[in-house]
Image (cartoon, rainbow, N blue to C red):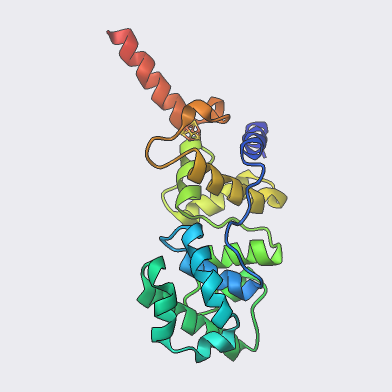
Length: 217
Ligand code: SF4
């Protein structure tokens, strides 16, 4: 791990010292359901939905038994509710068929409808496994800063894993998400209040473009 990467990690940690999972859950299974619901949806909305949903169903058996139309009514406001309801029903049945909730990333990925990103979040947050789940924020921020030069989430995950010590992976994931949510927005990143700007490739390109323009006037 380079000194620059350690410095970037420390600066992100200074800015987002409270970075953590923002989804509410009382069990690894509830977290899995919440992560499925969070695709293309804010954590705030998911928490509103699950605060009611988990009162009526909170175990694989209860979701497997739940009428799919009933489930869709609860999760409607999260968007993509047909697909999400199907995914929750089918992963619940998979867990019952497997005889219990999987506890590792590799086992989680064997559940129907659970991809690598979802499995990484649950493995890291619920089971303390070292993992980096790459969502849109992690992908954008890691590439902007220049921590990675990647075209896909898979490449981003692999490059971050080789650039940072393993014990930092899970918290790095939260730091990059918080940075993307609260500072390094996809439109109009707030570079003026960003402590990382001295290390950021995007910022350096931006400012060298401005100074070139000034020099040519
Ligand atoms: S300097 Fe700007 S682009 Fe770079 S990480 Fe900070 S907010 Fe994002």
